[in-house]
Length: 275
Length: 257
Ligand SMILES: Nc1ncnc2c1ncn2[C@@H]1O[C@H](COP(=O)(O)OP(=O)(O)OP(=O)(O)O)[C@@H](O)[C@H]1O
Ligand SMILES: [Mg+2]
Image (cartoon, rainbow over all chains, first blue to last red; front, side):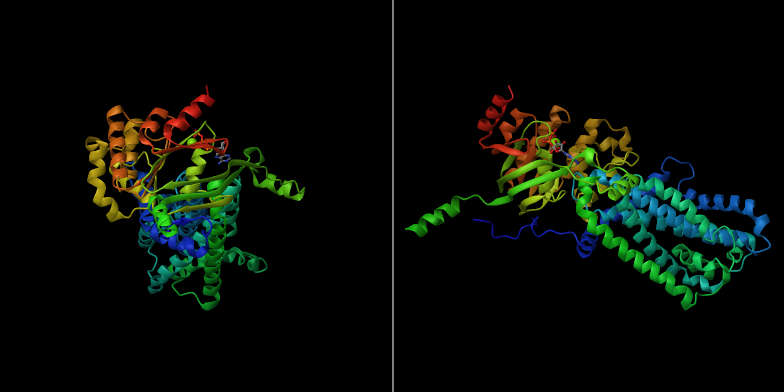
């Protein structure tokens, strides 16, 4: 009686897992590219300067912060503009990426209710867009370094590894927080407060040397402390991270990615009911 | 003797392409939705979280056969859209089982995946990607989509400048550019002007002749009567009647007089 051909979909044996979602994402890689393209195109479509804003934006923030704080910190840090920008790039990537993951899943939710799409595609494309912006914002960094007369080190060749680490961490965190935001709408609001506090608890604007030795261990609990270090060391101090510096960053990156991905996929079947 | 008889039945038994077995779907009632994290934490502490279920579908069993145009009718809130969602893998059934033997093309609620700032051209690729197609699959049908939707002149303008009928044309053209094994339509065909509606109907007939299965929801009963092989009437999440279009529709009309 029943058809002998293999079903395309059987709800009895269908279960979203961390592995199956990865496969689905592979099948939808064209959508991934399209979403990133859309986000980059539409963000600037009706503006005069277009994509140049991606570079002007961090430059503007950096100029303001430098102007405001350089009197305080100039004596502590030699090339303060380079110091601040190298940290700010990482921070902007993280905060933009995770926020876009939240709004991406909320927007995507209106589609997830209607057609089947692997839900991770929205978070992953959000981080992808932020990654493009991060790479573009290396251009103003180079300009600032030239203007400020800061040295260029060979250790900067380590940056692709740094980018990989912070991307993994941001993706994991973005998936986790966006999943929470589906279930509790006020998580998005609370996250903005958390981000502000988090920024000031990470030595980005102020030099690390200002942190007293007594408090430093607490600062080191913060994963963003290590992510920022992965950029500062090769750009600013001109050396590769040693193992004691690399391993915490690596651990946070891989750990957060795994936790975020597994948590996100474990909730996937509920999203269409909740968004 | 009995062997021959069984073979006969086999030959005349239509091949199922969608099977619903004792399907039930429950939503959480919105009033019970815990909106904020704070609320959740407080209620969790007070052990007051209780989930009230609303059964949108209860114990539905039916079978759609290969090559059929199958209609679903029923009042607002009867559970028709919910049923389509369960079939197209959007919602996992709460109870029971869904088995589908073919690739499904769901028709997006028109324009749901469009980005207003992007051009018609860009939206075609974006929309195709949302439906799970690859770049080459979209490139091969691009010209045909533009031609079918009759938007040649406007294809490079942002879709925020389109009229709602133009939106609908584009949406329909993208979703039906590749003939799917199963086409799912949720109240789609009522948009667009008459000429375009005829065009849509023609395309659906062609699909059907080529062996595709169509599952459609509509409140346009006369249109359904003309198009469908069978119709199911859903009422408050239960199947009231399944059978010949005319019979089911007149029973439905009789009930709702
Ligand atoms: N996400 C949801 N959360 C809670 N209840 C829902 C949700 N979606 C639908 N429902 C409820 O389920 C029932 C069936 O909804 P459904 O959309 O399937 O109806 P329908 O038959 O398609 O109606 P219509 O003809 O108006 O499109 C309705 O009572 C609706 O209130
Ligand atoms: Mg409906």
